[in-house]
Image 1 (cartoon, rainbow, N blue to C red):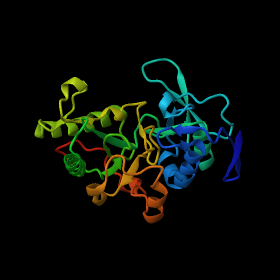
Image 2 (image 1 turned 120 degrees about the vertical axis):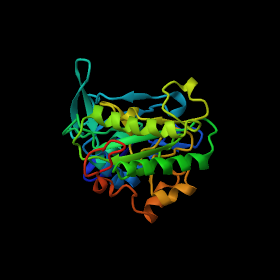
Image 3 (image 1 turned 60 degrees about the vertical axis):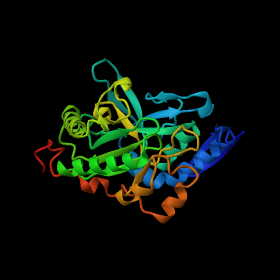
Length: 300
């Protein structure tokens, strides 16, 4: 069984539209397509021009999926693909770039549930335009405490001249992100955000850690800076997650944080949210620092 989806003048053939991708919830492929259609306008503002890593689940989230960096040969020729050199090893990966709604819906029709974006653009792969801190709590973490840490990390971003933006990841925690001017390389940006995280962990050693090994973190919130390396990714705003309930990564205003959880929004309620509220990350790039990621202790 197939169905046709039309968007922006493109006709996309959708195979197995009634295939159940979220078995606990009964959400089918056609439900996923309609979700991404509903968020396409705001989501593409955050994916445009960035290399994409896909996480696909042809048999639904109960059967496991796979990450895909190299674009498939069968993708239509109107799907933009960009060559990304590998660092530290030979070869080039040809990443999809989601610049428009037809590309987004075509990939959703290929059972892509999670869209992970690079932090630089394909026009300048070596200089990130985003800095991201991933706050990864332990199982059973206290939500009010996690929210309080998010607020304190936002303050630390401001202290070094960055404009913080918060995202509920649709997973376990939150992201604090800031737009950059694209003036510094990945290594320098990663070192700067690592320094910021390490200082926070030194100030609150019982609550926060930058320890890479899970068995050494205890019950502390892990401040993960690893996404700021060349070739790494973050979950794209408004992407679904491959978790029961079909939650989605959701940009938040800071004043919403007190009533938001990491999985507050998703397939079931995102369209209603966007009908009532402007994208909180709509002005993300307007908040770029005057000088890319000043080091802690040297604001602005």
